[in-house]
Length: 185
Image (cartoon, rainbow, N blue to C red; front, side, top):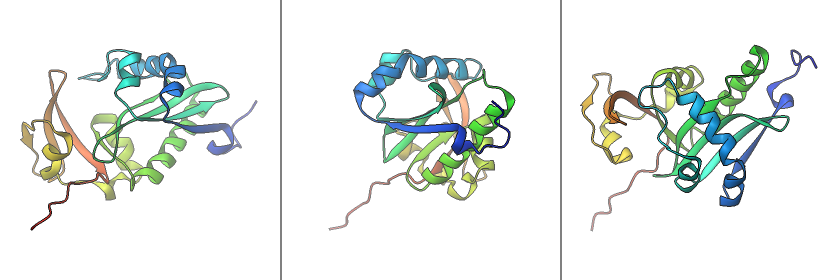
C-alpha cells in the first residue's frame, strides 16, 4: 500500500496504556523498542528489565502501525505526569518513520501543558523543533523537580548538568510540572 497521500492519523493509531495488566501484556515488545533506541545514548535506558519498566511507570502512550508498536512514550507519576522514556522503531521505512515523527510531534503538542519531561541531545532538539520552546522550565527548579543532585547550571537559565548512570549529561526540562505550593500560616 502507498502511504504517501495518507495523513499520520490515518496510518497510525495511539493508545494510552495505564493498567498494569495492559502494560504487562506488551512489556517485552515495548522494552525491546526502548532498549534498541537507547543502545547508543550515553547514560542509556533507566530501566534494566521489562518488569522494572512495568513496575516503575504509570502510563504508556503507544503508537501502532497495524498491530506493531512503532513508537512509545513512557510516563511516571512524578510532580504530575513526567515522560521518562521515548522510542521510535528503527526498522520503519522513511515514509512511515516520517509519519510516526509527525504523530509524536502532535502528541507532544497536545501534552506539553499536562505533562513534563527532562530531555537532552536528539530528543531535546526534536521536542524544541516541535513546539517545546515555549514550555521550557527554569533550571532553578531542576533539583526540586527531579529530586536529584544538580552538578552545574548553564548560563542560559534552562540547561543544567546532572549524573545519569555514571555519565554527566546536560539536560533541560520542558512542559508543565506540578510544583509544590507553600502555604503560609
